[in-house]
Image 1 (tube, rainbow over the protein chains, first blue to last red):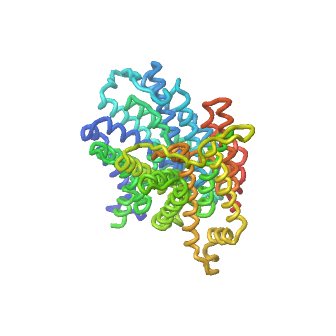
Image 2: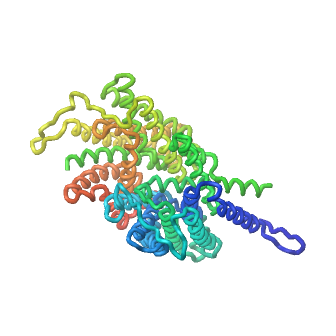
Image 3: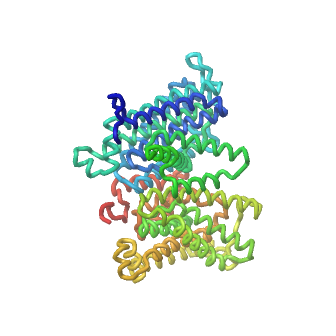
Amino acid sequence: MSAVTKLGVTRDPARVTRAAWLIGLGIILLALPHLIYPVLALDILAWGLFAVAFDLLFGFSGLLSFGHAAFWGTSAYLTAYLLGHGQSVPVAIAGGTLSALALAVPVAYLSVRSSGIYFSMITLAFAQMVSFLALQWTDLTGGENGLQGFARPSFLGLDFSDAQVRYYVCLALFTLGFGVAYRAVRSPFGQAQQAVRDSEQRAQSVGYNPARFKFTAFLLSAGLAGLAGAMYTFGHGVVSLEVVNWRTSGEVVMMTLLGGTTTLFGPVIGAGIVLLLRDVLTTANLPVGIVTGVVFVLVVLFFRRGVVGTLQHWLRRR
Amino acid sequence: MFNGLVNGAFYALLSLGLAVIFGMLRIVNFMHGALYMLGAFAAFALGQLLGLGFWPSLILAPLLVGLLGVVLERGLLSRLYGLEPSYNLLLTFGLTLLTQDLVKQVMLSRFAVSSAPYSPPEVLSGVVNLGFVVFPKYRLFVIALSLVVCLVTWFVIEKTRVGAIIRASTENPVVTRAFGINVSGWVTGVFAVGAALAGLAGVLAAPIYSVEPYMGAELIITTFAVVVIGGMGSIMGSVVTGFAVGVLAAVGAAVYPPIANTLVFILMALVLLVRPSGLFGLPEGAR
């Protein structure tokens, strides 16, 4: 992309566009709980970060994980468990996130050795193991009933029974997570990761170890998915088996694709669209599965760039 | 143990279809579980609307599902050839969500049920004494038929001229086309047969598990694990692993019940540690 020179100052147009996206997204997210009801806004933050985490692996490493619900769900459960056992909110959220990270170590070790569709199947199978475990280990997860009614003790004078307060706490966590992803993608690590995605052999020949990059990317992605899962528990105050179901893994893929992969903003916007759409459909008593299924099929067939990707493509061509 | 063989028969039939479709077309058909459900649903609907019994449905329902396979492959999946196989997985995932909820709506609005029992034919009701065990006739029939179908499919693909054409069409379409063979026609046929196999499994399952819109959802995940253990695309691998997993899960359940459903995934992790390409699969680079 060519740099624009104006009055002797070199400006990178891509950077300007990115800044515009950042500011736009920031304003929307700050205003969100005043535009829609706060619990839905909270959902958008949690799922949005979850989708960013997924895209870090799919968009930037080319690894389609079909089992990311394992990390989201493990963290969601552990956060709930810790809160239920009298831990403070920061400890519970940190504990949940770390549990996802810990789970990711063996899973990443076993799965990054394969690629393409093999990788997808293996991650899916691991997620199923977690899902069956969640069903069986009722002491920890409540089995079919899930966990609810756990405390969210106030911290630093913040009253977490207020959904608006919870939203802004989650917005801070979201910003932290998004910042980590943003930095990772722009860093030399992120550049190398994309080189590995584009051509593993070429990356290897200039001295990179593809397996190590994939492993690190997997951990980063799983950790952020864990943070998102902790936010979900904190926001809702309920956890059920749904968080480890394979549908959850599929939904995060759908949000990311719809918004646009490799954009980081895309997954957040995709999450927003899917959740708002579902909210509208449920309220209007329309069949949610049929409509989301159709949207998904159309996106895969005709709209693979996603909303943000298409917009960027269109802006660039002008 | 013997009931494990019945479950194994379904795993084998389903993973056989998946393996044929993946091995030949490189499509990861997430919709396989939904096609299985459609087979069962078709049998139920044919009975309700046309009064057809088990035997005609056993032929007609797989044919209908196979026909749907033709439409899917021609209309949708063929648009994604040349892209990453991931997109096939995603497309069929979307179709699964769509199909499940569509059938749910139809069952509720047209038939006013959310789940329906289905009876086996008169001849196959009752039990049979095998000397060492007394076993329901129908379940024995399921195991036998599934074995026959698996053997025939394996034989056709590995040993006959038709199989050779199919393998050539998928391994080197350009050269095969130069020999005057209609490659895309064969590809569609293979997908249709794979879909029909899932439909057949569905009809067979209807009297055992009853007809329900989400009956394929959990089964498909186990089937994926079976395919990964057996070696993706390996037909022999999926059939042998399918039956073995069924039996193993039944034995596991007898020893320690909670482990039954997880066993297959533990097994998968172990196999992957030792042999990343699966028990009967070739290493990834060797294709």
